Length: 197
Ligand SMILES: N[C@@H](CCC(=O)N[C@@H](CS)C(=O)NCC(=O)O)C(=O)O
Image (tube, rainbow, N blue to C red; front, side, top):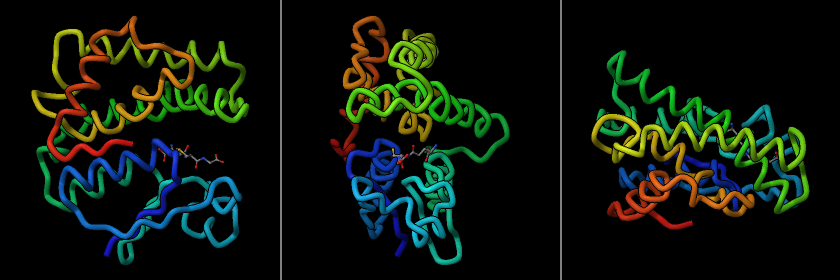
């Protein structure tokens, strides 16, 4: 069975749980103890060389990035709905995966980590939240008049961007200025099988 290496309060890990729930994919979850630094151990770095969760092991396949894992899980299930295989469709999804790994990760996630753990990876609260706001503005520009980030249905783009948009208030970034984003978060949560944190 596919193994997922995850962290307990890790939004990046939660992305994989969400997709597996939506597609009803079974998996074995191995909780990596981030508080005790297990993700920096030599043994774990053989699975994820950058020492982060999540990671995925499925037979000979080893992956260590949440976006890569989302693509793998969806495509392995043959799910064109959640991750299209055609050039334009895949590229459209990928641009949101890229946003989730830049403005949302380095802005919103790092701001949350700073607030929760006083660890400011790329600068102080003002810099992290300014970068995160660029990501929220990009989401809002699409979501003010669309239900989903791509096409007319949820895809892995929504799952990837949901995680740290949802936790923005924990980074002291209330979402009232982005009403389209707030409505979309509710729309995601209302999907059958969408798991809570
Ligand atoms: N871009 C990576 C980011 C992964 C990441 O930031 N993981 C966090 C948990 S959400 C982590 O392992 N943090 C531990 C640390 O940096 O010490 C991905 O999408 O997988």
